[in-house]
Image (cartoon, rainbow, N blue to C red; front, side):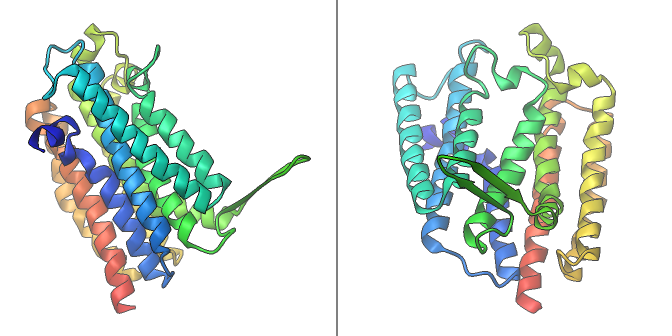
Length: 299
């Protein structure tokens, strides 16, 4: 079990777990009944596939970085196939129990997870990692959770037949969702950005041209700016009635987050300060989840 947890880097799964629990807290705040079957299927599929993508990433990276896997490569590949197979079956079952939107978005998540480090041009070697990680963890997990549990047509409607494809996007709920998920989107993207800033020189030597390569020193400004955008969206969410005034308490977290930003800007070394981006993620998304839950409890 210890080897398995090391291979799949279980400690990093906070980026999928917290958005999931934030979505549950929001459903609780909205007094929206939760479909237990769909939610359990989604959680299991999501979590197992998150383990799969990390395992694939480690399997491929250890071919070139000189590190060793906790398993022989043949056994590691078998574990990847098993994780992928079980998560795929659960995902397809969920799509069968819901609709085409879940199938398409779930399939897109699976494709991006696989091709993040695998294939002729992996996403991890392009200046797209921050965008993909932010959207797929920070936006798509909450969207799918809310889409499956809220009344049909709340966010969008997709109808397909032999003669036409009809797609209707409800602007106001979609905009509300973007404001709600800005925290996990930006905080997740910043974990990837911090990692790439720390690894910039090493990445260039192996042909990985990530976002900091193109942004240069401005990457540190982007790193700080994404956090500050999060606090603006929280205030806007309360002002627009998407979240309750209790959620304004989460704005107090700007104090430790700002301190971590300053420390990272002063010294961005993987072994010493990368962890600050993870700390900021837990502070931001954890505070948002807690205050939304408290809103449902007291209002």
